[in-house]
Amino acid sequence: MSLISYDDFSKVQICVGTIIEAAEHDTLKKPSIVLTIDFGEKIGIKKSSAQLQANYDSSKLLNKQIAAVINFPPKQIGKFMSEVLVLGFPDENNEPILVTPDFKIKNGGKLF
Image 1: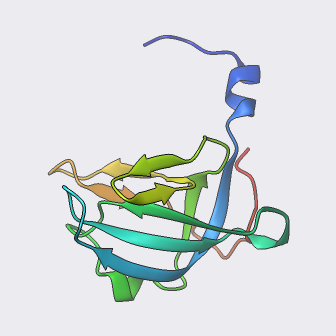
Image 2: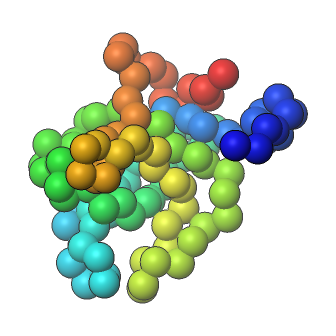
């Protein structure tokens, strides 16, 4: 494990947002769910693609709050441009479990 400074960590903007749309996207090599996430007035609405089907049904993701890195450059994933990196931890099968707050947070709230 390599150590980083607090200044390095503070450069990564991890914010909470609410999923307002979730749709299966099966045209990629690895099927995924395209998420449209509302990060509030200052950040706006962003899209991301995440391989979540093992643990999530797209219809049950609506209105779920999740954490994402919002200041990485956009990444091309097949024909889709992902604007944020949705965060998760691996389950026992190495499939993602989304990072979510226990309580309702104002969209755009930054992790500290």
